[in-house]
Structures are given as C-alpha cells and as structure tokens.
Length: 435
Image 1 (tube, one colour):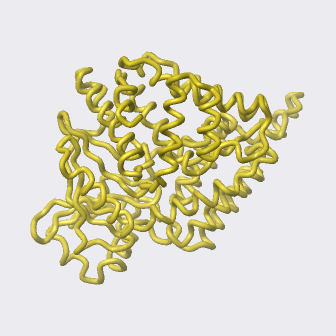
Image 2 (cartoon, helix red, strand yellow):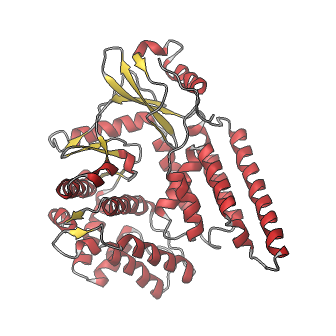
Image 3 (cartoon, helix red, strand yellow):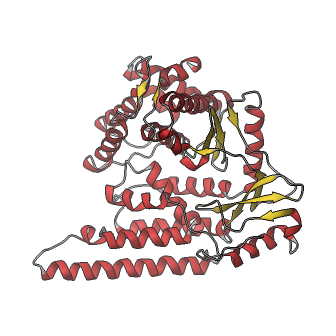
C-alpha cells in the first residue's frame, strides 16, 4: 500500500458543515464592509451588489464550497452548467470555479472510510492499493488498485458524511445565494433545488450507479466503438464502487489529434446522445470531460452516477421539437415545447418568443445536412448572451422542467467539448434516423 498524506479533510458532520457556511457568510460580509469603507474614502457610493462581487469574495465563496465538496460543490456545478445563462455573469463565474477538481481526503480519513465500507481487514480485497487518488471530485475520489486476483481496478470512494448532508447542504447554499442577492428577486427555484437534491441522492448511491453501468454495458454490448468498465460487485458497496480499470487518453487530448479522429469521436458522442434519448430512454446527463476517454477510434465511457431515465412521451416531445425546428415551423415548436413542459408558468408573449428564439439558436447545428464547424462558431457565446438577456434585461427567469434541464446540460456540454476540440460534425445526420 502506498500512502500520501496530502489532502484536505472533508467535514463529515452536518453541524461542522453548517459552521463552515456560516463562517463563510461572516467573511463575505466582512469583505463587503472593508471594500465599502475603502470605496467611500475614495468618494464613491458603491451598490451592495458591487461590494459583494469583489474578486476576494468570489475566491472566498468558491474556496469554501470546494472544501465542503458534496452537495455544496455540486449545486455550484449544476447552477454554473445549467443556469449559467440565466444567472448574473459574476455569479456564473464564482460557480464555474467549482468545476475544477477538489483536493483529496488525507490518508487517515481515507483509511477510516475503507474500514467502514469493507471491514477492518479491507486490505484482503487488494493485492495493491494506491492511496494517491487518480481524481478527486465533488462526491468522491477515484483510486487505482489491483484486486487479489490481479485485475487492475478503479475504486470510487465516497467522502464521509456527503450522502447524509445533501439536503442541508443544498438548503444552506440556496440560503447563501438568496442572502447574497445574487439570484434575481421573485425567482421560484425551489423546484430546481428539490430536483437537485433528488439527483444528488441518486449520484451518491453507488449501488444504483453499478446497476446503471450494467444497463449501459448490456445496451452497448454489440457496439465495439464504445468501451465501458465492468462492476466488481464482490468488492462494491453503496459508498464504494470497484470497477475494472479501463485505459484511455483524456478526451481533451484529442485537440492534438488529426481532425478526422476528432470529428469521428465527437460524431460518436452525438450519435450516442440521440440513441440514449430515443432508443434507450436512459441518458447519462453529466457532460464533464473527465467522464470520457478515447482509445484510438473508440470512446471510453466512465461515469454513470448522473444517469436519468426518461419517459417515452418526453422523448417523443423532443422528436417533434427537433422536426419542427428543422422545418422552421414556429407554431409546431411552441406546441412541442408546451408538451415537454415549458410555459407552465405565467409567461408574456414576448418572453415566449424569446424562449423559442433560444431553442432555434440551439438547433443551429441541425439546420444544414453538412458538418457544423463548432471550433469556428460563436454559438456557445450567443446562447449565453441570449440567456442573459432573457433573464436579466427582461427581468424574467423561466425554469424549464427538470428533465429538460438535465438533457440541455448534456447537449450544452457536447457543444462546448466540440468547440474546445475544433470538431466538425454533421449533427443532422446523427439525428435524422430518429425523426
């Protein structure tokens, strides 16, 4: 066993976690007072919002949520991914810092978790266990190990106290954002928070993730373009997930690869998305780049914690929406969006038009039966600007149904990855068989 004691202890008790958030609020308020005094001394009359959104306060919020990890960090990630276009740019920037990896647990805390999950003789399961993690994220960290039968493993270990603190963490972060004045007044985001809690409880259930991994292995069993790990159920628990270790290169490394390979692998990701939605009714909704590797022309799929099941009627609504967007049939687009669950709140005609306009913009890669050049497109930037205009300048926040929110998160993530890698993909060709 190799040890590495560097890391940051994860606060496991609810009261300890609440104390961290309370001290954060105090430090942010102190920072506001200090900055206010400095500006007043210079003859300025700053607004409270300007005082709150200083770089120092942004660092305080981001660092503290990253230290708490778990739901606190994940809510930041969800908001920055899903509602980033609807939030003030300053808040989106604060929350975006949480997409970076967290720091790992120290070895002593890791050992305690291993004993709790696998017993005091946990070492008997492994010929070798690397204490330095391969990755540390919001809910857990991943280690390389070798089973006692010699098979290389990736072992995903959950931070202590994370699952029990999800509800209180989400509520505490929501209170922090509300008190800060960063979320627009009058916004009803309770349904989004309830959905975030449900999603986080699912992600923290490693037995559920193991079942989802098994389902995807069965669904893709005859397609050798995709490589997935296999669950080692003899070692796994609800808080520890052991899987076969799959070699591969980080997906971002594709930027250095020939364009043909980049285009091929991104086309595979779009094909898989449409199969997940229309054939499997089961979508892995987390577009985090770390969830994908590649082996030459094959894609490695790693993480199934954020897998979401969709009703056939929901997929049918999107089939109609895509078809209407391709035909530029606005009444049909409006009807499809209504069927999916949009416009359930009171909405002005101009605001409805703005939502339809955003959908039309998001469907831009589908408009032509030709490769769309994501690398030379300003689509992501225009979507962000349109979303900001919708929520801020028109003083309007439209919460889409949660199922749509998680699907849009995945689509937006694929657009972002394709742009980052400069890929050219005929998205319409991938979609056409399903229309």
